Image (cartoon, rainbow, N blue to C red; front, top):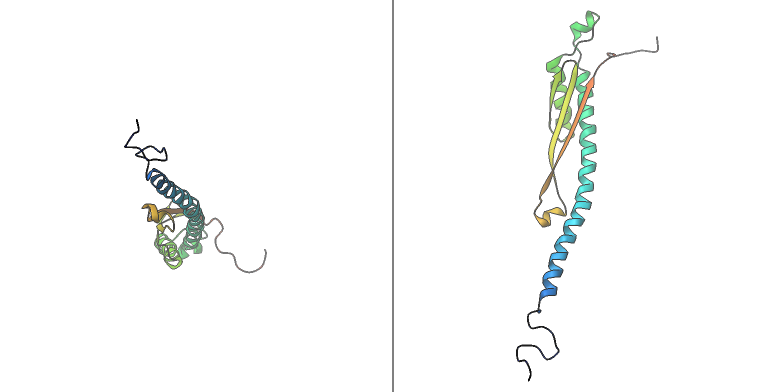
Length: 147
């Protein structure tokens, strides 16, 4: 007696195409893994750049000292000028940020979305990048030679 529902070469009847589905799922998983490696590396680099950008903007803001405070022999921050200088620096660098003055420290935050190259294939179109920097001017502006 022979079975009529099984192929002549002995394969099970319902296995046709199961390898194709496995390969398709494996390809998606490998693309996601490659995306994490490639786009994840880009995000780590962008975070370092965003932190450096925020720190530089905070330094630019901390340099905005009050003229009247300097004339009186003290070191005081011109708060509106510090915020304007810090935010202008972030605008000029291409990633607008926000600045605030806390006490005598200028704090800058830079947030933006980085488009993905590979993860877009699996539906992740962009990743968030954030940077934060703070600066306080302790010495004021010095000119001339050593004293």
